[in-house]
Every structure is written in C-alpha cells, then in structure tokens.
Length: 294
Image 1 (spheres, one colour):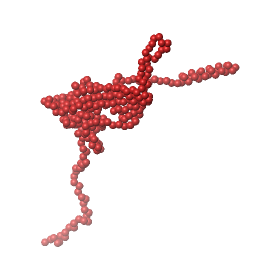
Image 2: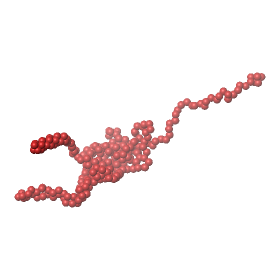
Image 3: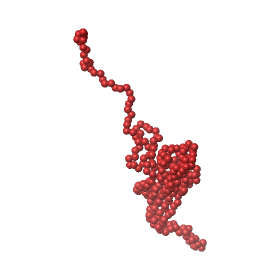
Image 4: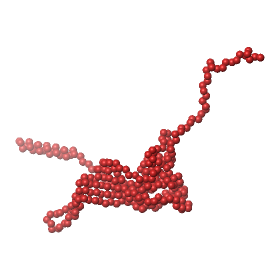
C-alpha cells in the first residue's frame, strides 16, 4: 500500500511539473543593425557641424547667393553637409537662390577630408592563437581570450572644408574662408573589466553604461552667428501678437539679420474728444433789455 501511495505521489508531482513548464511563457525579440553604425554617423555629422560653424559668411550678408553643390558629389553624408552649409548661409544673413542665374555671387565649397578612423590601447595580456597539434591526445582551444587590466578604444571623425565666393557675371573673386578643420571623438575605456566608460564630443558629457557622469561643452563658431544646433528666430519670420524676437543679453550670439524690438506703441487715431458741457447754473445770464434800449 505504501508503494502505491508513493506511485500516486510521483504521478501527481510529474503532472504538476508538466503544468508548471507549460505555464511558463517565452518570447523572442528580433533586432537588426544598419550597415553603418550610429557612432560612425554621429562622428561624421558632429565633425561637419563643428567645421561649418567656423565659416563666417557675413561678408555676403543681404546678397543673393547660389551654393554650388556639384563638387560635393563624392563627399560622405553629402546631403547633411549641403543642408548645414545652406543653414549657415541663412544664419549669416545671405539670401539663397535656387537658380544660378538669379544670384550675384556664387559660393563654392570643397571637401578635403571626411571620414573616421580608430585605434586601441591595451594594458594586459592580448589574445593568443594556440597552435594545433594533430597527434595531441587532448584537443586544445584555437585561441585564448585577452585578459585586459585597462583597455581603451578611440574613434574619431574628421571634416576638412574650404569655401570661396566670386561674382557670377565677371568671375571676380570676392571672398575665401580659409581651411575649416574639425575633429569629433568617441572614447571607450574599460578598467579591470568594468566599462565601458564613454566620453567624447558626440556625447553630452561622460557616461558609464549609458548614464551621464558629468557635463561638458565644446563649441567653436564665429561671434555673432548662431550655432547649427541652436534655436534662432530671424527677421524674415512671421510676427505674432506677443511674440518678440529673442534678445541675447550675454553677447555671445546675435543674429546678423535680427530686428530689435521697438518700445513705442502705436497711437490710436480717431476724432478729438471734447470736454463735458458746463452745468446750466454756471451758464452766463442774459442782459436786461431795458438797460440796452436807447
């Protein structure tokens, strides 16, 4: 009888285990990656922003200009570069024309370098390839992994730009920007297996496992010109009631075409307002006709 009880108990336990396994759910998430990593795209776009911000187009302020794009056909991230140059032209007060014949000045940019590279530094034991011996009684692993005490991987993006302008009708040169060279950085650091500690120009301060450690700021641009990543309102924007152009009290950024708000208010126009009439008791009394006769 004891054996039958144990048998029934085993059956119940097996059934309970099978139900528990069936009740446990599982799911899968499909992930995919782009051909170019997000870090590479951020490095190049950040280097473009920093280089374009160095170019001061205010010598052509208020003039109709045409941006010559044909020499940028082979540049990496060409569309982002062209849009950044157009935005910088507008921020400096230039008037963009879509047709070459409508412009007085031609602005021609060129790219000297646009790309990324990387290098690494390791303090520890690097990965080692283990030679395989066919007659060995024990199969050995193909390689031994690295044992890092401290490790650093650095990746940088470089953008080198130059721009010049000339008159469309005569070809006479009027301006050149010089070389605008900027670099962006992304650094990953591991210490005794902990990491990565991320820092660089593409991050808002240093980060560890996605969390921000401290804030940093690195900006280089001509004075009086809005940065590419800043919000700005220009004189051509439609005006709304109660919406005044932004004022920059710190003197760091002031739009070339910005309008200062006026303090005077328009006066109402209408008929003149007369004073109220005097009461009857104060009206002048009429003269006695007997005194005025003869």
